[in-house]
Length: 251
Image 1 (cartoon, one colour):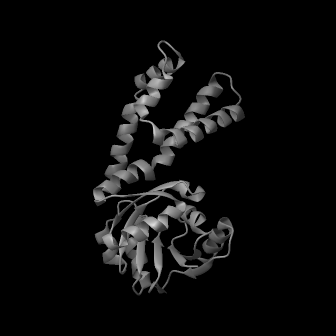
Image 2 (tube, rainbow, N blue to C red):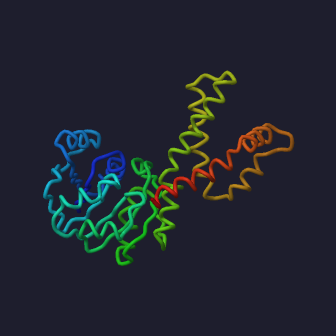
Image 3 (cartoon, rainbow, N blue to C red):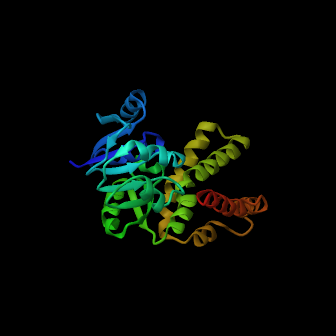
């Protein structure tokens, strides 16, 4: 079984590792033994744990899951040349990655937290000779989309990478609305969960505008609710969320 080396042990590393642990041996590199043990406990399997100082990446398949601001500091602690480097660092260019971490091939990737349940949509770009390998690796945690430019990946970061937070806000707000009208919180959450689960399977098969039109009867409940969302600027808010999140990747 091939080994995947995670440099960094935060939430994203844990989510990806949960998706890969049945297919790969997991090695994790971090700053402290305490944080590494916590990672292992949360992952639920034995992992090879190594401290970051002077860690040799020679010949390894590395998934880089640190904070973007720490790329120079972490790069200075690593020695050797990795076989493959997969970065999940938002807004960190391939050029910056190559300047700080030596590897025979570098890929920028943007999975999301759905990786932990095998349902991530991971966007990829980078050295073309690793395209197929990268797609095969990240298919272990969901679907993949190869993008031709780093700008497109930064836009995808704002959409799919940050998207779970946007959808979580909408889920919570819809539940709050149901509770306001008199539904028990637990029931509201169960109903909303069913809505999100079913919609996730439906939307890939039908254009969103057609789905909306299919639900909206003249003068009906959906029309009233939809009009309220438009009045409150939900559409503009979603467009602005992508714009502002994308701008952060360009700093």
